[in-house]
Length: 204
Ligand code: AMP
Image (cartoon, rainbow, N blue to C red; front, side):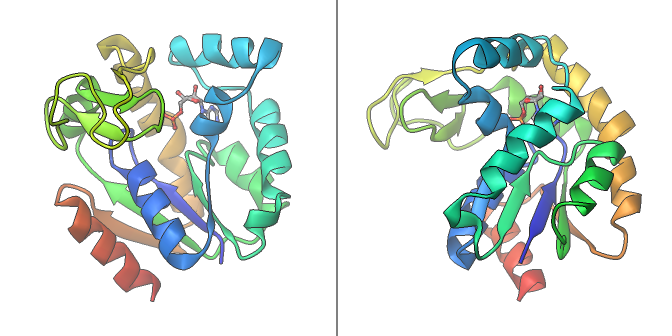
């Protein structure tokens, strides 16, 4: 089964994609994580694009994604998180794999801004926290899970966040119409466990 998770930044789609992927035995592929993990000259180029709040060019995005989708852990299917982000990417993806379901996790723009401004994550194990909402770390700046240092992403400044919110409405929202037959809407403004429950119910 191949599933796409869509949602404005901060909707919790990354968290949900990771949990649901484990539960269903699928590979969780986040294009943002793939780009952040890229090394060398390519990694530097991608970092500059991300820090400016811009989108990585479609051709490069698809090339990196295709390399990831042929790995062994994708055999049972994948959950795509952060891709496709525009209509062209959705059309390109059609040529590569069959998509079974599209899960849209819905939150308001205000909620997105609030969640992203407070978002911090562990530089070691990548666990996520939020100093404005939840979960807050027990000790400021330190990861509960591994003791690593908690840092804010360079592209989580208010200006860069607003750019990403605008880009979502202008570029990503049109894909919802493209996938309307496969689309399932989930209320993202509820407890993480309840969002998870709603998603699993619709998938089972
Ligand atoms: P994310 O972790 O999903 O917030 O993505 C972080 C950044 O990676 C975005 O702001 C974009 O610069 C880039 N990015 C992630 N996915 C895509 C994509 N599908 N197409 C283009 N750029 C992307």
